[in-house]
Structures are given as C-alpha cells and as structure tokens.
Length: 124
Image (cartoon, rainbow, N blue to C red; front, side, top):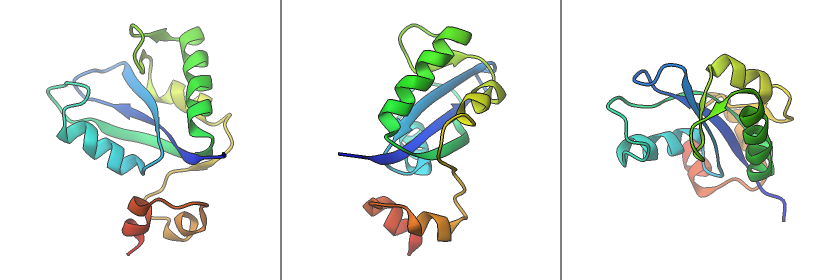
C-alpha cells in the first residue's frame, strides 16, 4: 500500500550543529508538538521545525536520506540525529520529489491524497 507523509528536519538552539531528520504521517506541526510536550528527545529548550516535505512513501524516503546523511555527515549513535547544518540537509531534501511544507498553503494541503484526521482538522 502506498503511503503519504512528511520527512522533516528539526533543530534546537541548545544543540547547534545538530539536526534530527525523521518522518511522520501526521503533520510536521503535530509531530513537533509531541516532541516538545512529551520531551521525546530530552533537551532544555524547545525544538524548532526547520522545514518538511510532503512525500510519497515517507518511511522509504527517510531511510534513504539517513543513508546519505550517514555517508556525508556524522550520525549520532544509531539515532535520527546528525552532526550537520539544516542547510546541508536541505540540499538532500531538494533531491526528493514532493512539496515543501507550508502550513498556510491550505489549497495544496486539501488536494493531498488520503488526508489524515489531523490534517482535516487543520482545514476547519
């Protein structure tokens, strides 16, 4: 079954030169709120969404971008964190088909296939 979702890049002021690259089938904002509310990645300051991209098969895209980042940057243990800049990650994101996340682009969001309940709620 084909899935749709987001790959994203998250930064944190307490951890300059580090980024987290992940995926979600929810919206990037919902994922970010979860991380900050539940202290998912344990940091003294809140995480910030640098950018995200809406893609087909997000899990596959996430694995591929992790492989590239691991090859060209430093992966922190076996986590989704990498020692690099958001600008470097953006160069890899630009190689991937999809639409960059813009929370204000309601018209584009509405056209996406298989909208989740969370996404539908944002449109109301």
